[in-house]
Length: 112
Ligand code: AMP
Ligand code: ZN
Picture 1 (cartoon, protein in one colour):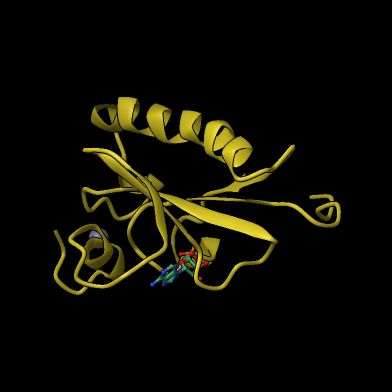
Picture 2 (cartoon, helix red, strand yellow):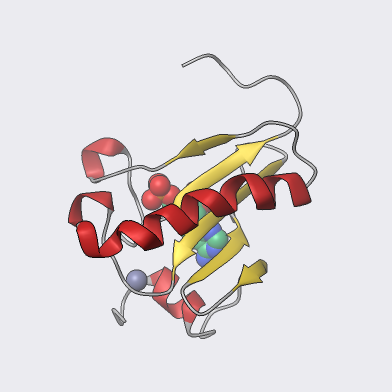
């Protein structure tokens, strides 16, 4: 737990979020500023700064987070989706607590 981390505060229910999946290790909630009709974040409850701070002890957690993406995207009505993990300020990361973006719906996503 990092006291000034917004996602840790969501994990401890100190601030609200639109959570729709939760287990002992992971929580999933809708992004507050969606960039697509469906946009949610898969987040470990443990404070991990970013993908760059992960090592082999996070292997199972990372696999679990990725495998949740298609399951939850389908439950949210998506037939296809994009995943994104911003890493470090130069990678566009703004919240320094690891998270996987999952988004889709509406028009076709731009080609990357
Ligand atoms: P990133 O730029 O990859 O660090 O993404 C951080 C994401 O967290 C952004 O898409 C924000 O819109 C989202 N976000 C920030 N605060 C909240 C919050 N309180 N509840 C839900 N999503 C949030
Ligand atoms: Zn945190």
